[in-house]
Amino acid sequence: MTTRRTCEIEPFRYQATPQPDAGSGASANQINEQSLEDYLNRFKEAVCADIDSIIAECCGGGGDGGAETFLELTDTPASYAGAGGQFVKVKASVDGLEFVAGGAGADVDGITLNYSTSEQATNRTWIGGATIYQKTINFGALPNTTLKEVAHGITGLSRVVKVMGMSYDGTSWINIPFVHRTTATSQVQLIIDATNVRIWTGSNRTTFTDTYVTIWYLK
Image: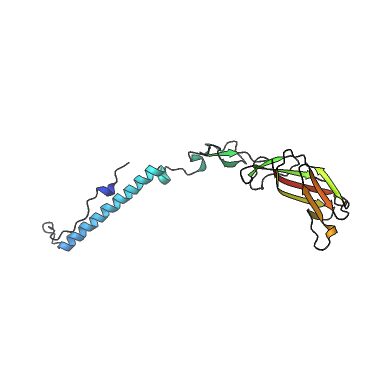
């Protein structure tokens, strides 16, 4: 480590009977004041020099030599080439950052993941670290006052985290499940089991021919 100049400055000592320069005519107080001023100037210069030295040692020179862009950091990729549209991710080795591709396998809070009738890993995890998957089921038309089942095709389903459905009759969309504010028979019930998406209707809902159910789940 560089020797600090601040530590090399002799402390200021007040002189009770200083010796003025011949012919100066300066009083003792004037001599002491001048000595103190000289001392403070030397101390200021030493402090500034030490600050510059410390910055150079710990930060690569601060604004004159430190990293000013993401790529200049020592634990990041060296180039943006080929990484357009990708995300920054902590490495599995937990010792730096890397770029990873977006798309079906790299959802960020459910924003970038496209809906698909094929199973997708969301890149999100459940309590304990299990991967959450997503799949959308084309259920078709709702039934007429009965139960209808459509196989979801998920192998090894162990837990449903969330389920959401929408149905359309050419004029209006309704949430699935659907709760009517006054009429129980107008309601639509939705259940997911190990094999099927199961929907009951309390009235004829066959005009709702366009129905999709999205499931978020563990395996």
